[in-house]
Length: 312
Image (cartoon, rainbow, N blue to C red; front, top):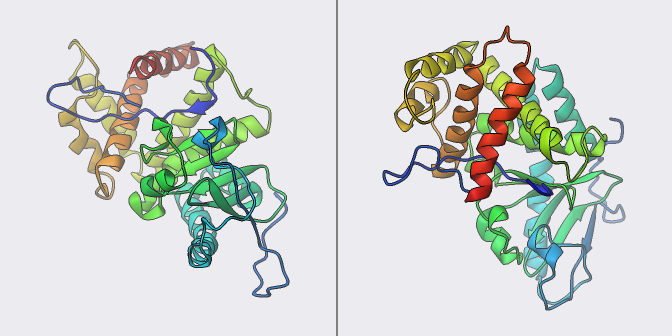
């Protein structure tokens, strides 16, 4: 499949003129926030280059001050930054409560994530601290204003950029807390695997696919825990209802059956992310759990789905 420096999430956007599977496009040390101007909480650095460079298409790099970013914009971004961190950590702890792997990832983000806000024209404002990866919370308009042009980073989706060691997620209110937290743990799994050397940054083949399997298994488990076991049971029922039919075992009309266990989606972006996860979960549900090669079968499913993604 070539280099996979950016983990693209499977999403399903249903269109009557297309197939149901239209797939477009990673403890101790804690931040102490003290209201003293003498304490350096953030590092504000700005990029002066007028020509976009390759890296600016992912996460804008640290830079030196320019007149592009007003004091008011910086103040607003700072306020959001200080609000984002505790809110996202609290959200993740709630979503992952009782799951050992999920709890570990929530602590990983709390202890090692450097929260970052995008400003105009390739500029950023970041929390200070000795951290291992960035956490960038930005809406699509914010990404455009920051100079990001890469389509995969403009689709208002969750993504981990291995080259920049950056977890990029939408504004927290653009997804329900449940699904925003669950999908964030998927990308946190990739961040953790890279930083702990479980997976190489540009993995391919089975190594790449197994990384996706780990992340999807975590999502499915968290959703099933929320639904008290009913989610996995229903994915099996959906799989069985389409046995012998052509095409995918998850159809557009099946979404209400699986959505019934969760709060209503906030919008079309969350709906597309849900359908992508449902498609994967229903495929996984068709594997005999007693089979000796469950892991291999899941890797093959992921490989097939990502081949579709690459073809778009």
